Length: 158
Image 1 (cartoon, one colour):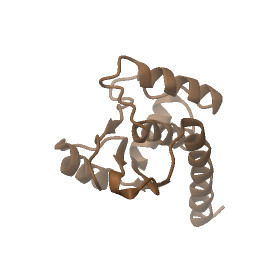
Image 2 (tube, rainbow, N blue to C red):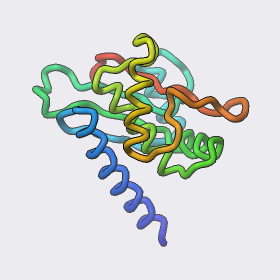
Image 3 (cartoon, helix red, strand yellow):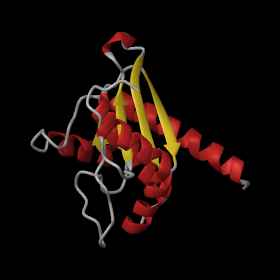
Image 4 (cartoon, rainbow, N blue to C red):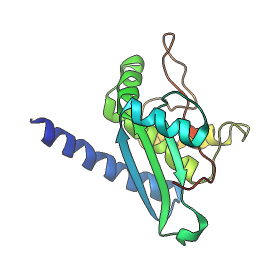
């Protein structure tokens, strides 16, 4: 399969997965998903979170003015996702789906840094229902420098 066909196939699988996960979570409105480089993710993280390093996933909830038509955007560093997939022994596509799920939960208002485990419990139930490997809020890296935690940007506009 050519690189373009493989990319298109992966994009279609991610879009179908995101729509299914959105319905299960109850996120209404369009969600944009950006698969990007480490450098671009580092710039986004620096701009919106004042953290000068790349990360795996960032969530950008839509402004209240969007009237529910747009739920927000999710940015995923594809090289980080691929490295995490290797670290945890599953396919990159599965890792991207985990990151999409995690980002959608942030768009729905969950915040694993401050919710006493509520997001982790929700993510684990959805992960099982969607037949995905261990989720971001429950797994531990198998070696130093493994998985990174996702970060939400609160209610900042993109």
